[in-house]
Length: 252
Image (tube, rainbow, N blue to C red; front, side, top):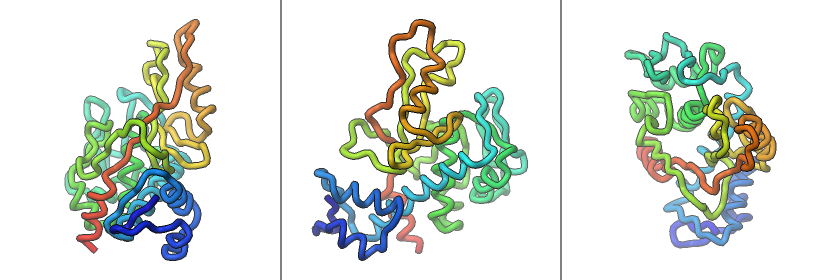
């Protein structure tokens, strides 16, 4: 169920008012059909979440279609015109470079970049925000970007890993765990993915596929005589949609 202010709103009314289609319509249907009450201060807050979730999906698909490569941290690479590669394998924004330009360069010059899956997930979040927020706002919110893993993701994005959520939604970050991974291939201990809807996921290094496809791929990298299969965790990573919407709505 969706409540805007103190009023519940039907899926049909929402679709007509916001002219929803595609992924946004799918997400709105899941929210409106749920037994859980999703509350928004105004229609603008709901619209922002739908826009950002759609942008996350688009950014994930675009990264998959690019020539952005999978490499472990010790073999990562980046475009030195925009980023400095650190000793730990992360990418630190160069001085006097606009953050939005640096994020966009990963997509336009993708063959210059390579890293592992958690960094790819972080890149998707930044790209999604570049495409939703005005450039001036994005650059003021994220002046010092360090691309590596979740620990270095800017606090304004506010990623939280929620256990046992009521509904899994397109645009959610998910994780497939490989409990019996071969110690010789620790990079395959799991796969960070984005939910693209209809049972499909994007994970850097594996690409786009069904949950069964991703599990099958991870199972190739288990110890000999392993008895436990890889599996999808019952949790979802989500940005702080309300906080980001506050920043956006105060700016426009």
